[in-house]
Amino acid sequence: MTATDVFIGLGSNQADPSAQLAGAVARLAALPKTELVAQSPFYRSKPVGPQEQPDFVNGAAWLRTELSPLELLDQLQTIEQAHGRKRIQHWGPRTLDLDLLLYGHETIASERLNVPHAELANRDFVLQPLLDLEPGLALPDGRTVAQLRQQCPDNHLQKLNPVERTPFPPA
View 1 (spheres, rainbow, N blue to C red):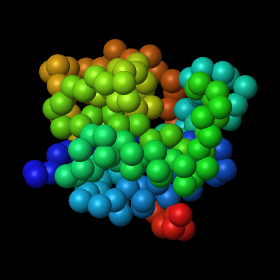
View 2: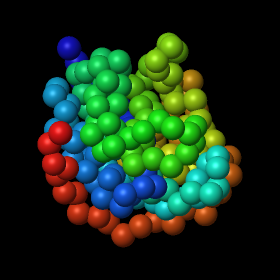
View 3: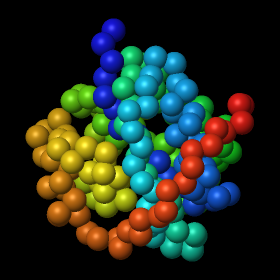
């Protein structure tokens, strides 16, 4: 099987969010049949949805994988669970959120997975990290991430200082 370039959105606002994201990147780099190409800087942003929660730290990772979309989704959910992810409140606080944003040039619409991610075009905290990784990146429909970023409301993202990537303890 040929490897596919995929982009993963990362987010956390609980239990040392920058460390959660750094640990997730380390785990992504260790996935089977997968190579970490690059990771974006991390950004602080206001929460989407309920505002009575801490700010989020967000970023993105660029992977090259031979895993199918659903195999990759299963791996992402396993990593979330290892970081203590509890799905209690929609758009609520979380230790780790990993979203499959783009899977090559594929459009996927299934019960478990929608790619490109449905809210990608509306989230500057997703678009800016993608631009940092690949300025010429385009969606399967031809729209570029740069065009989407120009049209997206500004959430006053705050770029954070680099965090050393430290391995997360094995599950």
